[in-house]
Image (tube, rainbow, N blue to C red; front, side, top):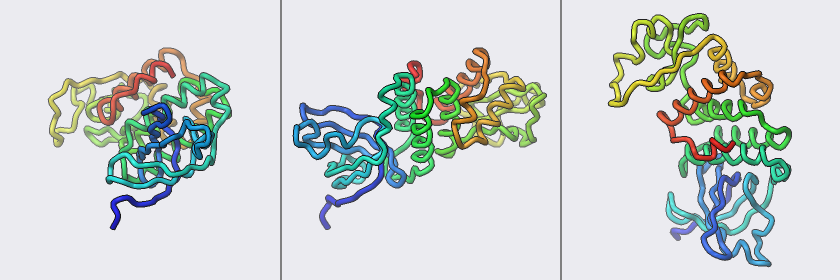
Length: 263
């Protein structure tokens, strides 16, 4: 069988990198193939079939020649499904879109079913075409992405004693344990299940007040960014929420991209 196979999929453009005067590499997020990297040869030529068919944040149908299993493939054609052109008229929305695409790219891998991440990211990008996203929407996306890749922080039961959590307690967020530790365990100085092998890294905990407790749990149950858009957060609440989610993702998934500070 020929090592190069013809294949098609639906993909959302996460990144575009020039590799010559006329060609560039396109990184796609796909539901069935995870992160897909293709070379669009001659994309800048005047009569190229790629002209106007894809750009950052576009969702397209893409045809490509599959080469090595996890290598760089050769794009043959693509057709625009959703261009999200309004993102090019709102720089704040474009910055937010760039960040979630960067974050998704860091947390998906080639040839793994990433339908949950694909649908989450497209749903969020579509929302950005309607409104200028509030800063808390990006934090909601970070929490939702953690769930989409199977790394949801534990917000309903203590990871140490397995007891249901109550917001009125003096809970703390344990980055190492990946969730909220109940007041009883935190007061006793227990932040990690003894049955688990402790990693040789320092523990980092963040105090969680009832308001932060409520926001995190509500966001985790929301599949749409609309609720986060209307969540009223003070600067101090935003700082704590940002610290929790940044620390959690950096420890359990991938380090945050530099675009987080810009978005």
